[in-house]
Length: 204
Image (cartoon, rainbow, N blue to C red; front, top):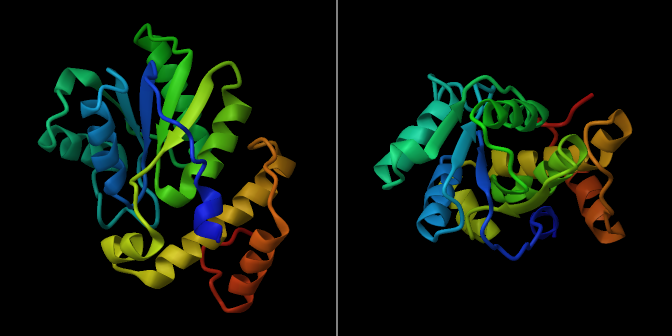
């Protein structure tokens, strides 16, 4: 239920630029490459430095490793920009916006590519910090069971589902994102998972 809630279900149409949001999940780079080859955009930014869940896997930074993977998947080098410093989703959006402006790119439409369970939070963040652009979201088209297998750590994935939903709920109060309606059954599922101990990604 929470997995489905996190995904926006946007219809994907061509965008001025795509932004691959850094994380521990190399599937973001793979999905970005697939969408590039589908002709949905011609400019792609990978953004992200290091994070606690990704540092061991991507020691040179998330965006750097994502770019290398996209190149292996046939995305041309001149289509990719790298923003290597962002440490959270707000910085992903802000630093990417600054990078694009420096390159003379002022998009009207942006496609955010993220982990499947990060679509809603990235959408809410971008709408708060970059309200003048039209934002659509995409991710790898995986069911939850298949995603867990791809990551190889069920506890981590469920902890992240819970943590991202907490941020969807709490971040608007802090000015980090626009508010999103959370259906009662989704909120009940969230509370149930917290009671069951899926709490390692919760913020204080």
